[in-house]
Image (cartoon, rainbow, N blue to C red; front, side):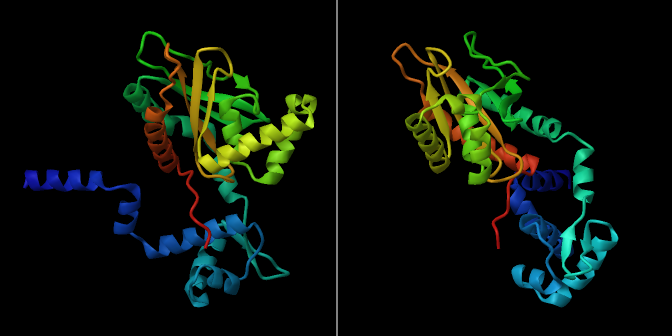
Length: 276
């Protein structure tokens, strides 16, 4: 009996988040979350018929769910158009805890495992007030290692992490951030074009790397935590010392870096579902 139960627990633990979701699907809950996520994505009031078409459901399927969400204060019905939209309740619930604190708490065990695996330091950053803010760091177990101060802020266009975060913004937001950068104002047209091309390449490649940008003998490689164009993203970056032969060994770092970023994204709930 105990052995069978133990095996069952091990089997459950081995399931991925997506596999568990499919195995224990709750249709009514899925329907409600579909409505909330779609209304958040569209950001305009939508009628019951419009929601039904967009979510590939029958209008009568959504009637009770819309009434429930409205009754609980998550959505409201516009008196003029009859469309439904989100209220401030989700925002209020999110404000109970700092999103950065939650992100760090979720990310730290994965970052520690990454630092132990690749034996390099890694740090987590976000864009705040158009600057790169260092939220957390896990140091390499090696005696010689690179370190960055948690809580410090850095240039958005002059750092590897910053360009990675800029590459995840939509064009309008990106242009606004660039125009507010002091370095941007001093650049000529050629330098600005080069910087935009570099940011575009990061968006295309899905990672950012630099060699000797802050000081000689250093190299950074980073990937996005979250989803492009999402309201909250972070950059997970490995800072490493370049070997005497000039090799930063980024080819061995990219796969575990991406694997860790994906794990943090899933654990923190930062992945966006594909638009319907």
